[in-house]
Length: 168
Image (cartoon, rainbow, N blue to C red; front, side, top):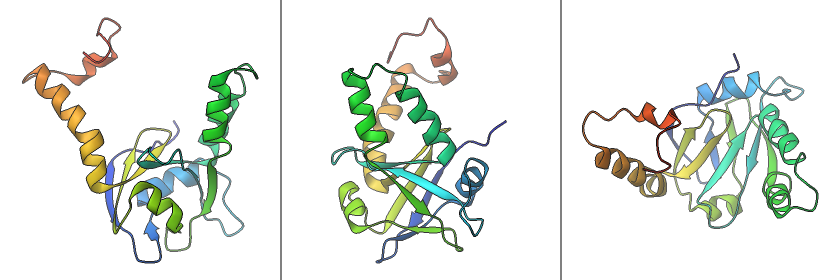
């Protein structure tokens, strides 16, 4: 079984933009990539768009699988064009240093409003890097509201059932 990105990790970003990759995420990266010449993992970050609010991280194996899936779409399709722009044209490889850190350029930090607090959130074959407060506002509130509306005792695994209505 391939290791997956999971968990939420809050980390500090120093003034130069250096941030540690969570240890658990480094293990997944090593498992899912060809390491650099020093045996360190390579991380692929997708910058998305200026209003996405987060950076999207992948192992090299995961981004290659996603890119292969995108290449199956018709060349003339709008979906393929959009996905190619995001996952071919807007990704960058980052070397993880010997201390388990990467340096996020100022432009990427500015794009997501990243100050000194970064939140890494695992989503299986990918993860996201957020400003901690923005993540809570954007992702935390809808999940909390949904579960509250379902009531005490609701089992969120019911969302896996085919009969469950989308979003509801």
